[in-house]
Image 1: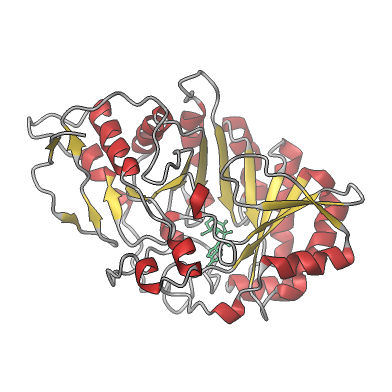
Image 2: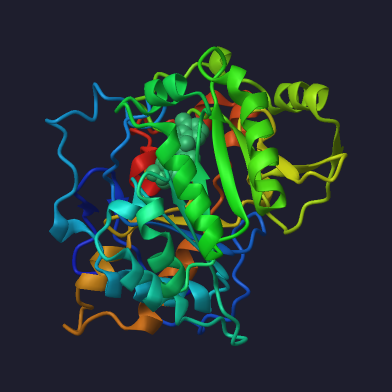
Amino acid sequence: MGESILPKSIAIADLRYAAAVPQVPAQAAAPNGLLADRLGRPLHDLRISVTDRCNFRCSYCMPKDVFDSQYKFLPQSSLLSFEEITRVARLFVAHGVAKLRLTGGEPLLRKHLEVLIGQLAALRTPAGDELDITLTTNGSLLERKAQALHDAGLKRVTVSLDALDDTIFRRMNDVDFPVADVLRGIEAALRVGLAPVKINMVVKRGTNDQEIVPLARHVRQHYGKAAVLRFIEYMDVGATNGWRMDEVLPSAQVVQRLSEAFPLEPLQASAPGETAQRWSYADGGGEIGVISSVTQAFCHDCNRARLSTEGKLFLCLFASRGHDLRALLRGTAPDGRPWSDEQIAAAIGLIWSGRDDRYSELRSAGDAKASADAGSGERRVEMHYIGG
Ligand code: SAM
């Protein structure tokens, strides 16, 4: 890529997780939507974390004893503004991104989120197509916000729901939040047309695996084909959840249990890089998916980039190092002028073309050292900070 213009200082950025200020290539071709990383993977999805705060304290994600009243969440000034997020998204779209997912933390805690959705919905791909814009939420505020989100241009939502049983649900969210409110949020989303709603259940063996069949039955009976329930293997993200392999229930066992209650037939993937393996109910009652991030790693076609709340770009959910795009958004080039869109797009292109992360595949292959982020010993990024 030739000579590069380095920002005045290339110090490791300070806050939270290590992040280097990206190099800006001196000469770069304009984005052509054909970017590929070192393993030939295209860039298709951008997940944007809009807040690191959440009103739940699920023990597998934000355990209460770590994320307590003393925990210092990011100050408002660290967060990317809606204009900054939209600018970054536009540059990613020029590089081929067609799908944006807003996440967090709990994204519905970010004030006036519908304003951001409106700005993102106005973006178009180089071919002039609308973007696929979606959001992942715990559903606690969805009943109140579904209509405004839809009106602003949101297409779909994914709701996390780990149990149908109220006692188990309250215990898992660890803030005593009732499941009925989340169910009402799902119903509101369906009513306003945010469909199909994906419902994600993280399965922890011994904690909520008895809820697999009851939740499937509820979703089939009440939402039919308007909702797709997906079961996610409990992952070893971050460093605070005390993950243990014996708490992972392999997706194969989830499918086995479900098919004993409701016969299933496999479905083809609907899009390249799709994370879920899909199954349909043999009686035509809808479909389910399983996301086997632990037992069947899918790094080989991972086409997702993740933008943290404070503008750091992460190339893998298991990374410990990001690329500080905010430093370019807010900083100046050596000539004293703000970095231009072309320069920042070129920096993004350089980052993606150097990407070779495949943590989960290396972990599966037993390459512990390589999978521990090249043995750097750095703390892995937490899920609430870059989103799921
Ligand atoms: N607050 C939103 C929500 O609840 O969907 C968005 C952020 S949350 C981090 C995104 C997703 O990550 C949720 O579905 C959550 O269950 C999932 N998640 C968090 N930690 C996980 C883990 N250790 N293994 C698997 N999934 C996890």
